[in-house]
Image 1: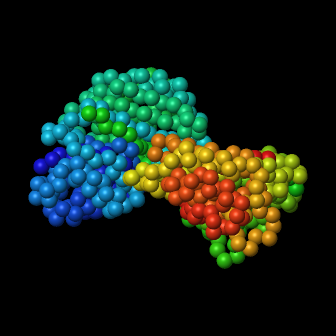
Image 2: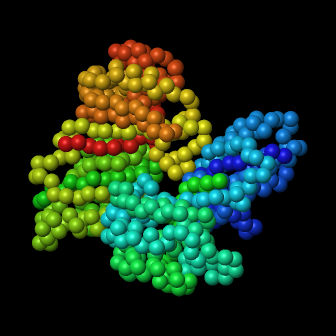
Image 3: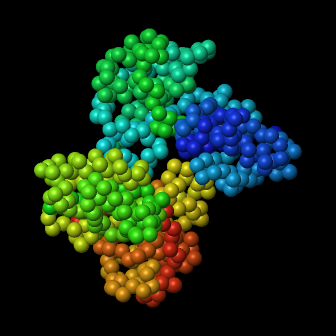
Length: 253
Length: 253
């Protein structure tokens, strides 16, 4: 049973998120599993690097899965990779694409082996809307002080208890995470936030961005972020930003 | 009656093209005129720099129009520009945006004063589809020789009779045009064709691109373009490429 690793891109607009659900077939994992299971005549499950929420996009989601020998009809793993690529091009809807399929080591696990993840949050910061990328950015025309947001972001770097930035009020596991880098830059009329860390809590990027935007709009000064972090209270932080601006950019192993 | 110039962006996917039609309200010009006419209580017509076909996009379409003094309620032209911007943000659908409105000179005419126009044709040249920009590119995974296409493009530069590249078989006016520049480049998995000229015939960019792609795919050698041009016969040139890959990029006055 060879272990296959794939990279997946999706426009999350139409979907209820990554994770398979019993009550809807509108999930990314569900769509891919349905295609594989139909193709190979048995239930095939895939493991993603992590969930993405409803409406969130992915530029480089990673998943792995095994194909039972009975499905392989004497084909080599490399031949099966090519077969899989063609199946995905043929059967996936136009808002999901598998950009890469290759044989991974037997022990590779797309969730357990994650070293770092990068997420991007995009805000279109102009008076008029963005016609072409409207589904991938949040439109917010308030003046934003990028320098103040950068200063605030410095307080979030490193290993902290991010309980104040966790969207799951009943979280029982550790809320300690490490953020390696937060890059904030203006690209024309866009403000782009890029977060890299060893893992992120539910809604964490969206709450971090909501808090930084509060700082950028002078709702409170950059130093306030230190108190929010120390409080460990969700209500102290900024709003959860809408899903449409968020993209899982890259998963590093 | 001040003369207003505006820059318009649109995702042309849902529309029957730029030009107002009696049989459908799904045109860009029709949408903008309907908003202005309703707002100011009388028929207001706008002049675009030129038509775009059904499904073609615009990054920088230009139009101008006059507001009768009776509509201005004592406001200065600058105040009216701001009012117009707000009206467009409020009432335009999400796939049309007016990015700029300003007072133009009394004699400015968006079609008659055009000096140069730039169009972009985008091809996504990978095995897997592009999820995020799928509506703005044509997906074609055939290997393409960019150098051969560049060589062929050289023969098209300058002033020529482009009858072989005209989609209107009954064209009665001159089919002579001047192409100043054709830039062809690979940007990651994308191949981008950028055409600048003093004006283009109906479907001309799409037929030029179809011909260059024929060259890129070795259907015929670059030199064949010289014969096609000299023939002045539409059937000698390549296919009319689909509208979705085409964007009116910029109009220069």
